[in-house]
Image (cartoon, rainbow, N blue to C red):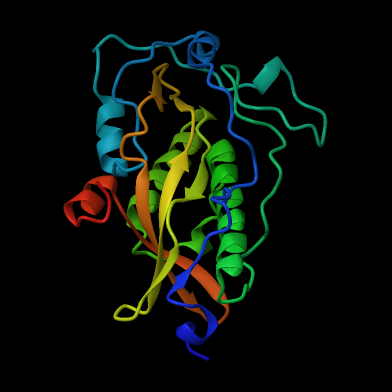
Length: 248
């Protein structure tokens, strides 16, 4: 059964509902910065920047050695089993709920795509809070490269002894679901919703990126549907979409 027999060329969205599961977190960047007990220079890692660019920025700065941060427990103590505790200046999040162990098969419908996106967002946010990306990789093809580079940066940050405060995202559909007959892919315009992210490095530097203007937050997400599975195949930036006349 071909894609057009399952979905119309233009399947309407249901009320602009969020793909994500969790609510938006209140922004309290200055308080979190104080808790992190470190400076907050400009040039925080961007989710559209390559891991190389981020690493270069993180390694630049004063020749004066920075104090090494010892990663401990968020909240200042080990949380009881099952008690979720957000990351703070003391350490990373604890007892983050596990995402699904592997991608699920969903129908070739917009409802099926929504279910996959909820699973992907939970796996992605889990990885950002823990550094464990094993659950998120299977949702993305290699061509979804910009987000893969960012998630590799987060993974390496945790491996080196750092962690992330906040930094999770929701995603909201901004267009109808469309089917590209030439590429045999689906696409949707997506807006990323987030508050701020603080990237605590073991060398004492803390980078903060705050969402104040919503610039560059609309993307075109493209998807492939194969053998019952949805996969993220590409995302195009705000700039690219404007150049192509898709958005103003």
